[in-house]
Length: 110
Ligand code: HEC
Image (cartoon, rainbow, N blue to C red; front, side, top):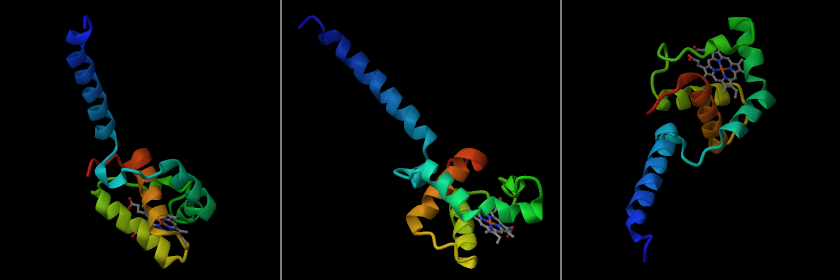
């Protein structure tokens, strides 16, 4: 078994990769689909409404650290806009949207 000594290094490299990947995706968004969240936001015209109040493309509404400082609050806000405005999103879809917003604007770790 001449290759045996290399095994621990391969294992260590694999563990490093797994560690790097999980550092990017917070636990709350494991298994979520951010690109589906993006599609849903275009479909429901979220930013068209935000633009009426915040101008430009509406994206100025996303202000990390002001009203929203955690993933939990971000999810809550997405849920409020959803239920308050009857956008008819399922909970999994809200999670996909929150994952997209976190990836694009908020960058919260937890
Ligand atoms: C009919 C108008 C309207 C629609 C449609 C709408 N929103 Fe909002 N949204 C608002 C208003 C008004 C606020 C600000 C209210 C506040 O700050 O409490 C807001 C605030 C937010 C915030 C908080 C931003 C921050 O950092 O403080 C998020 C996140 C958000 N909306 C997500 C969404 C998503 C996702 C959708 C679509 C699924 C959506 N909204 C659809 C009106 C709308």
